[in-house]
Image 1 (cartoon, rainbow, N blue to C red):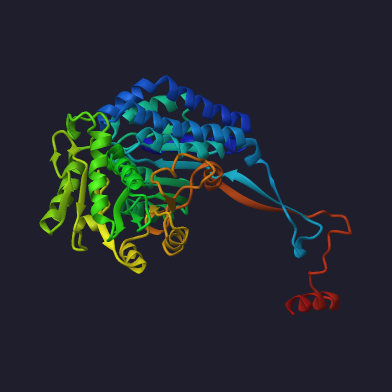
Image 2 (cartoon, rainbow, N blue to C red; image 1 turned 45 degrees about the vertical axis):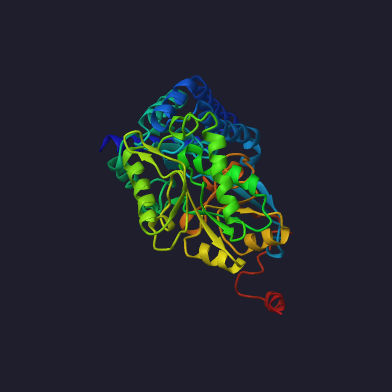
Length: 467
């Protein structure tokens, strides 16, 4: 047996004990994890700076997401764990119906690099809250953060309850070959398909969060100053390495020129306010590695070669892992950037004349994780919300729907993902919802009329129900 399989077997051995653990025991584990995060806060900041060139406050905001989920789970755990009484139907009269949410067993979290501490811990919170053992596979592209997460988990929980598996693709492949009960995956669609197929081998349930190209609709009535400021932030934040980041804008043709002028102005106002240059800004992070930097540069170069106009930006430095915040326009469907998720600080701008054109543009791409509408026309807002599909949507802002309210379920639809996380939804995803019917045995309620040989009375009851 390999070391990975041996550690997995150890996690499996605790399934029954963890299933029967109390709300207090589970809450204490979550508290221990948060205490470890607080203790290593400065190390987590330093890791973020090394890996992504992030500002300490950006990392702190990611940690606040973890705290919000932990606090919400602790507050509600006892209630979530109680059997839920279910109202009777005609066929269950005299019986007691309930739903009990039991742990699934062992949960695997395959996490991403763009917010590595949060990506490792946020899915682990509902898994632990639901009474599961947890295996965490951090991204190998964020090794400093991965090491800190491993040390936090090792100090907070015993190895038969939680384990961190570091390594590359080979480690992920070996983990996927094991019979986990639930798999949570964050990343791209191509690997998501692999996760889905391998999960089927063991009939494991899955939660997939896979991003995609999230559109922004800006109509004739939008407050352009407001939209430009928020989109400049949403596209440059974390160097665009955000699963719900706005990928492309579809703006009414009458507002295009004004918007392009404003967003260039806002990028400089937010990230070059001292005139030192965007590449010197403490608020413009770096791409995770040179390979992804080169990939993003190639998308921009391909678009330029096929006729895109650079409104601002366009520069890059592969060695520094720097992509200059960039806005492109004059886009066409033959450009690679219109079909591949950029995951970098590059915003493409398209125009529309009629609402139907907006729907057509969005429908050419898979269902996105997020969709944003900027408008002051309630009827137009409802039209765009009702005639599009996305995992989440925001009106007159962007990137504020994830990690901000544990009462809001978060996840994708179609190729952008399946399943939900966040508060109670995450707890339910990591639980088996078990329907239970209790049959009293007294003669007034234990009615056996439905058993053969069928009586005339039973025949009449059933046939009457069909009318």
